[in-house]
Length: 143
Image 1 (cartoon, one colour):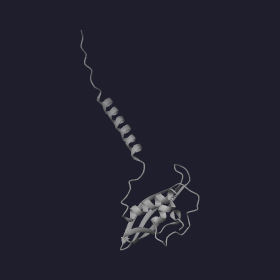
Image 2: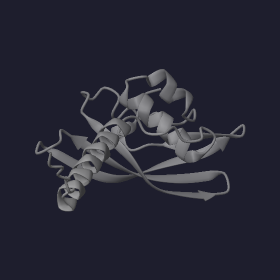
Image 3: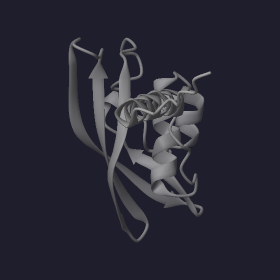
Image 4: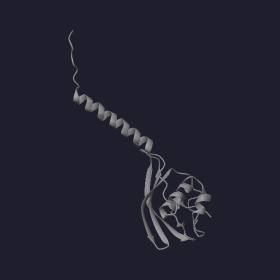
């Protein structure tokens, strides 16, 4: 009886391992991309995140609760709903005023009509809470 031993072809094993890692990595990317992580709701960024989400969802009651009494310029509330994304860019805080810079991406992706603009949202503190005082037209609501 003849006993033969099999040798492992290292390049094949390495290629299989790389393929498995790519598949697992791809699955992690697909399953982890979803809703953004909620920011601290007591910070200017957290207020803007909640405000923008409320406006984009058509929840104007919540958006107005996160706004000052003087806010609400009626530019965008009655506009037809367009697909929008809001991306945090920068925050500047000076005393009781904060400016949150965001990028607003409007339109349909991939390869659809899509445009973006950089906008500033001004917040002030009232009774110890940050509230939106000035919002760009794409995120404005009527009081």
